Length: 157
Image 1 (cartoon, rainbow, N blue to C red):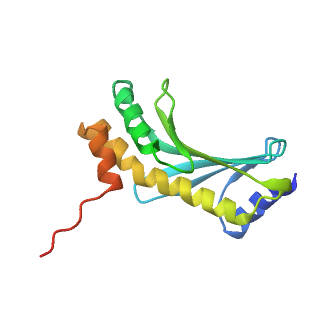
Image 2 (spheres, rainbow, N blue to C red; image 1 turned 60 degrees about the vertical axis):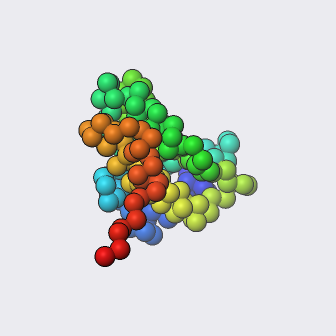
């Protein structure tokens, strides 16, 4: 095991996060519960590139007929994101959020791990409602994204 992967595993152990590790490919798999759904997270360490990669998957498979609308929804969600991106597999409808960090000199900081996991889960939890409203509520992608990015203010009583 290399130092960066050891840091990842040690961090998960210290946080009492249940996970499965694959030391051959230096990756872990863990499930997390958010407010909107339960998500699977895959994190891997690539020593050759000093790269920490995180993929968080939505439980929703986009029906084939809704994939063009969801592609637009995710494009609208991605616009302006400074870190990470949404992706959809056009063949099977899988939706995920992906982000990566370069870690210099083989040192993966625990703060990077925590922030990456938190950001991936937050983004999926925030935007999954837009995906669902487009698929099942026939909401227009532009409206769905606007609703999650600028929620309506409660009216004063």
